[in-house]
Length: 147
Image (cartoon, rainbow, N blue to C red):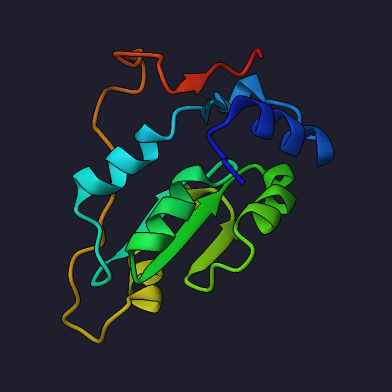
């Protein structure tokens, strides 16, 4: 299943009765090079555990699972959990947690899900830093919640 294909995404979301939430600022990737580039740029390897915040329907999660020893994805929107069950089926190194990352003990998550015994490599977070109010530099690769 190509989780970056617009038609696949629309069919998947329709099957699950999913509706975008503007209040959550939901946007899903529609360009495969985006998750590939994030995983490559972050240097994720089988020595890493990765904490992903907001996996959406899972295109980045799938790429991370192929590269990392363990992926823990935290999703706030409970309506996406059945979608993730479908898209991440068969990926034994992925655990999806339902919750608000701001209310979870990240240190405990890292300790509980480390792929190696201490001392382990630092978890990899393949994101870029920008102020929350700043618009992305490009909208290529994502479509807005209003679609």
